[in-house]
Length: 59
Image (cartoon, rainbow, N blue to C red):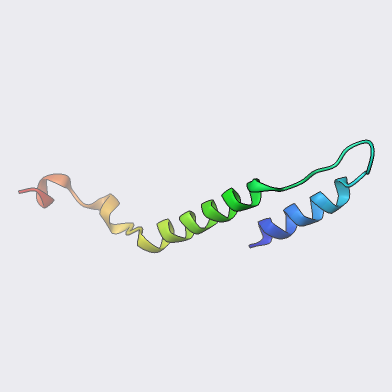
């Protein structure tokens, strides 16, 4: 979750008014969706499957 704080910090630094500005808009939604997807992937990943022999599994 430190990534969210880094984004907030960088956005607050770049607010220079007339010269440039950064808005997160829909990017925050996609970022949160990818974080959630990665959490689910880590939760369901079984590293033991990497070492299993496919021939032993399928017969």
